[in-house]
Image (cartoon, rainbow, N blue to C red; front, top):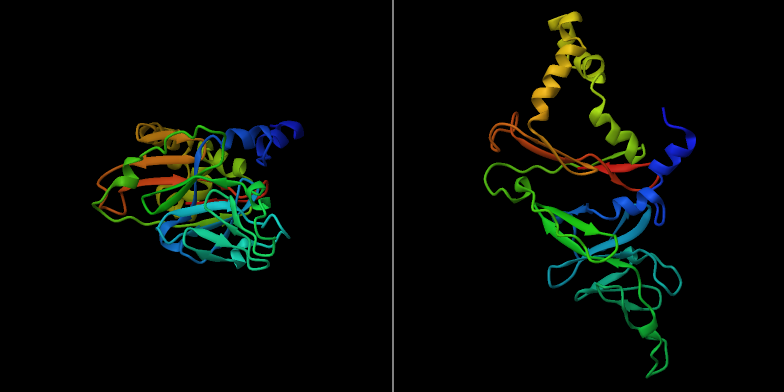
Length: 252
């Protein structure tokens, strides 16, 4: 069992926290490509409120949600080219967060050059938008084979869980719950009998499954079995947790 101090250290993921700094060293999925359009959308990642949009060039952009002027949420703004304009006083920001225009300022004012929102690099792969929120230089985005496959069927599912990232990730290595929870719910226990579906059987299955598991990042589980076109026993890749904040996470 963790002490309260250990739990606090592992589950807090805001900027400047120990675990927050660790998780910011990885690329995280922050959106689905087909959902990211010229209409700005609000997202939360690692405790930070951000705005995500697609510019006229087709490139995605991710930056802090609030305008530096009056803290208006930029998901109410509009996309112009690859930039986003605040709806309150018209401040215009490019995809790097740099302020380009401040319409109410005197002509010749250089104040805009001093204003820059936090912005993060993004890349798209396999129908997902990934972002890197850590220090430079950013690592290469891993080209996971399953995200690059062009044969078969790709499905992306998104769901929110009201639990911190650690609660969900630790479930991956919790073997004993399989027989009692999933076995019962799927009626396997009733068909096979309680004793025949004991922990030793689950462990044997897990050893077999371990040959197919490869961990690429703290929050990602990879499982390959069978052919990619067979949905029932195909290839799967899951981000068990994209931390939204200290108390909740999103999974893909």
